[in-house]
Length: 399
Image 1: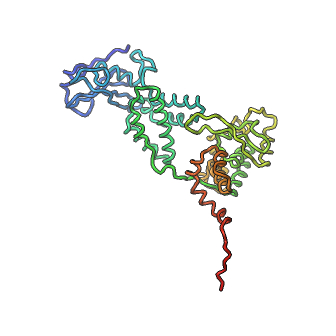
Image 2: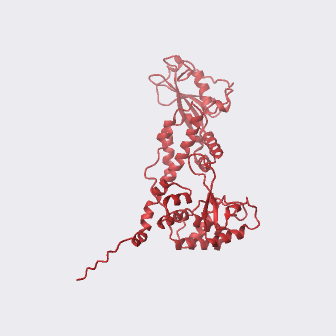
Image 3: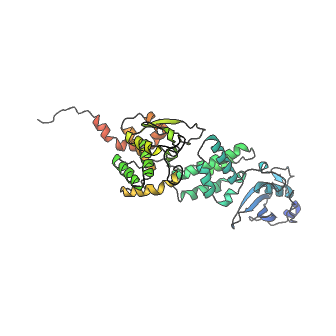
């Protein structure tokens, strides 16, 4: 049990009511990096917890009324000693004999718990990992139960200074999901309204900004990729041919090469648990021959597309060499990215009359997502297709 800190000016209601009414809180240090604050008001004062982040900053959160004019009831109205105990529990827990399961989780703990939950359900864990790296230390150390809408709104606005609206919304959605997960496990976390308001998605974030490449440009990029190395060329040709994500192509195994088709693993995208099914995707005979040649002698459960010096390809290893290949193909590497191969594959199938349901299944996405994201590009690239179906009545206007 932690020893209570003494403060003659705050311990009793009589002493507190003698203090001057002011906006700045009176405070007492109750443990390292932790202070209990008291704001003297015209009416009942307010207890707050003030926590230093170890880097010259701190955060403060009000959590209860002081028993200045009514008796303490142990929850919403607290005396000095009760406030001191609750401040410790809210800030970090354990100082009063409580274990980690008896206190609300911090933001960092909520992200870690959400990451583990996603991993157990077969979901993507990249966003919780990324958020633990980019969020301010003071926010990571803050209990979820003490988050306020204003600070989360400021966080979202800070993200917006360096990211596109869609990226800001994705990070906000991931953080909201982690906080909702924490709240679902702890009934004491009742401030979900704070992140629903503070992390409200930015408008106009779903405007399609996809770059669609014509077939000639795609072939140039594939050729330049092969000049950088056969392993990299095979990866880029596979992505361009199938329209798969790198996370899918990286999980291809030798056994997934079956003649002139690939059994492509599904992605881990989506809100619900997904089974890792494999969908047969046709590939040109020439690509099948090249893949068969490099896979010869490998175990069936080994990676089909091998990253030299490593095991499987990952997205971060793809960016730099792809930028080199794109530039060599006379493309702007800041505009033309690996995702352009996927976007181009989807549009290529649509304007060649492949049914939208088949296109969605082939690319492991939904009809709704295709209609929302690619409708503009379908219109831009389908004029030639429509012209072939136009009726020419053959009426002559010559006299």
